[in-house]
Length: 578
Image (cartoon, rainbow, N blue to C red; front, top):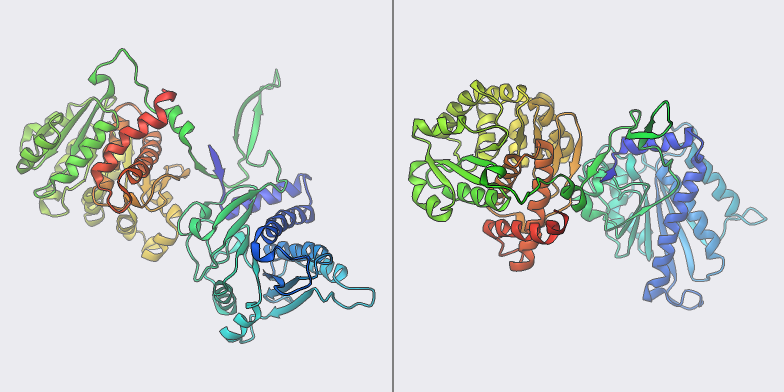
């Protein structure tokens, strides 16, 4: 299980490393710059257009460095120092430094580490007579001055490679003014960009573009991957991601608790003074918690996955969900759906038990399910109309009388929650009983669910701060929240976050969410707890999409291809781990 960090978490790890004496701030910066320099130099050496760098003929190599006035800018200036040292042996190599920001003595923007690096550059870059090396050209871009876009593009037009050290992980608001102009000018150049820790304009915490962003060819990040480097669009804007070890304290993320008598280590826990990381699960982590398949078993061993799904004309949602539940390993599927869907559902999934929701006895069948061996998926194709409301209200009323059955609340059930306070209250009341509840909203449904919360009434805020929005939903409903997106985030009620790394564009098709809901319900019915069912379901669903894309392509994938992919993923990824 990999830990990834927010900007606040990384700042605290940095502080902890310095405070505990592992490395000084300058040593961390020098090491970071050395790692970036290595990447820049490899790029120079391997690019065919620069093979003759030692010759004095044409085709000069100009490394442009964009430096802000914070610690990230300090990293950039340290890179300039290292390039300047190397450039003495290479006639064709020159460096162009653009410092963007207020560096006056009165400014509180520049950090001590930045000023230290600037002073070192002034000292090392000058000859005995005090003249700056002809290998380095420098320009200061001041925020209060006015510059034309063409003027800034002209500054960068000769660069053959750019180092982006404007903001790093410290950016927390949209890029505006002259900073935005510089980013746009840099993005307009046709040369590789090496980002220092984080591409400028990309949120470290959410991967969202804050105003305008500078896409990187390669991003050199320090110590740990950052959340915004895993979430789209940040993931694509990072280009190739290199995680460089710069010497952060090895015990910064966790602390070992020892037996006071023997001194032996008992357990390693997250350090409480460092913001909790986000986690990434891999196939080994998934395999460790997947429900087992004992040889001595029968269909009851693997539970019943029930559905309240499929209004008139929407039988496909129930059908896809049921198929996914069976592929996910459940022993029995029970479909509570509109009576008019009987023919298509019993033809499409003859293995499932069909119950018309118009029948009073159908609800009793649901209430009789064993909560320890069953789960209920509510919402796919339910309809957000008056009939859907009536069905959902009756169901939730009955469930609140005898709580305990694990629930997956999806699609129209989420829309009805957002639309009707009475339904929303019933879901909250049910979750208060500590019965397992998983909510599976996509971004649009997240916006609607949070619309009652004044702090989250801005739809754009939900989109750009999806991890935090997911944590808010999980906390409000005391439920696991799966915030479905191109990079899905799973939030637990206690604030823990997991970023899923599987999936592809093949999943962007009608019925894909129904398949996910059915798969998660299946895992719950087999005995997985809500956290593990959600994480495993999202991971396997993503892998199933990848497998389907290999078979039929991302353009031609249908929900049934994803369902078939579940079986392939179990066979290929997990059969040897059982």
